[in-house]
Length: 397
Image 1 (cartoon, rainbow, N blue to C red):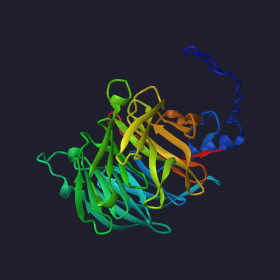
Image 2 (image 1 turned 90 degrees about the horizontal axis):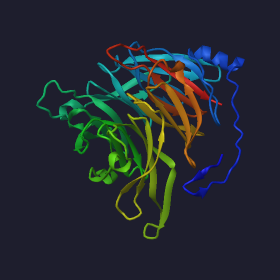
Image 3 (image 1 turned 180 degrees about the vertical axis):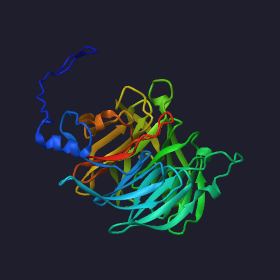
Image 4 (image 1 turned 90 degrees about the vertical axis):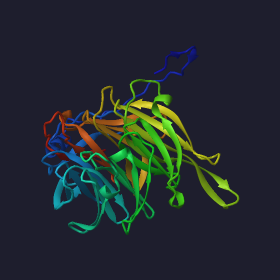
């Protein structure tokens, strides 16, 4: 390593890279159970497919973890609850519930509940029993989606909850509708995006909501004290110099990027800065800082990386967890069938990579769990052809 850059001498070194043995019996057995070919990994982790959960006939669109169990959903509208044991390589479908009339676009774990949102405009709130999902209540967002076009989709693209509030991103006018979680009472709407919102997360101790959309913008909203006021917008095209505009597909907050300072009036430390990560249709991974040190939210672009050089029809972002806490490891997955593990603690480097199922099927979403395990939802509609759905469980060693 080390070359001359713009007249500056870069200190040279030689790095020794260790490659995991992907040709041994253990990885071969894992690949057989997972039904896919294992690609040699680079860097810190060796990635291998441990399990294939085949339940969806027409594409797995959403997944989430609830404790040690996994919930999957797909294009036919049903939800499955799985018991997953990556150590033994065993899995069992505990229950399957009829949930939505068509695509399930979003799953979100909130306290002791899991929330699902779909193209039918409904949001269901489920409790997770020992061996089944139990529907507690349903919120019909279509009653608040105002349109003069009867043919316009009234679907829900994603859901997130915080405190006593539920935020549902809907198709009509690309709005975010706000509800009371327990009662389902409608509170208000948040407007600003010009096309469908694809993903949401919270930052600054959940005081701010971050949303991204196909309009290639990051928006920051104040949700403290039930407020829905608009704070700031970062337009991707102005920050990253490339054309054409590339829609944003997913966003995740980096918990370990938090910076604080002592507030003498509150006699406590308050969060002043935190970073979020986005992935775009162009395969770009971008980090953004949300800075509140001056009292107002300021969003600035930090750095760019590449998940892929080609266009992505779908993509997901998630964090690995260790001991119940999020780590510095960020997972990116896309319609190119590739899952990458990034170390975000320093200069952002790929520390693990695998082409799931030989890259034969697109990945729509990923979800990280404890014990260094990632779930990847495979199979989406492409060019009018139904691709069989599957969830692949990927183990990191």
